[in-house]
Amino acid sequence: MISSTNIKVKIQKMLKPLAEAFDTVGVTPDILTVMGFFLSLISALLIYRRMFAIAGFVFLFAGACDVLDGILARVKGRITKVGAFMDSFFDRYADFFPLAAFVVLAVEEKDTTMAILGLLSIMGSFATSYAKARAESLGVECKVGLIERPERFFIILFTLFTGFVDSMLLFLALFSNFTAFQRFFYTIKALRSES
Image 1: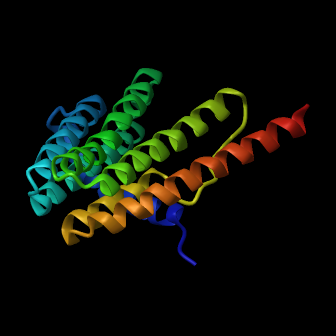
Image 2: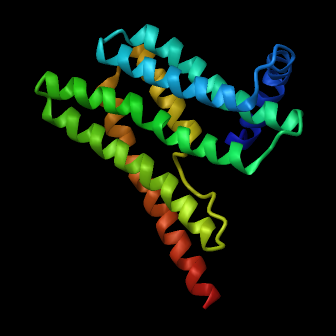
């Protein structure tokens, strides 16, 4: 059985030469982090204009930057607390932009259901990330969950190339919040077992 961890490792191996090429022209991990942030913002603007296919390509490059910054930092021994914080900080915005664009689009089209599903998707995405960060601040390693950030990325990417917006938002609204509560109950159980 192929796990998401194995896929991630294979993708990182494939992208390692590209990360090294960026290093040779002076591109740092922090630059890639900021580039990913702006590309995600541009993809959101394109989503708002209903240019889904172009938004998909831009979003794909944003995701590539998000992967490459970590690879470059590891390969060149540039892993720093500042870089890790920047990466996590800008990732939250990158998570928000495309989903927010779908919400704004829904509001403009007076599609209340789509708007609510978009808001629930945003809430679930942020609650999932927050649950992990807060659990780890309390000493609990919290890597459980059905739909984590990489899965959300590929679901949104698939949607941009296929146009199945309603189905995607319903799926994310349900399963991103399910994942958040998975982490909630896992952390509660782990903390109680310590006391």
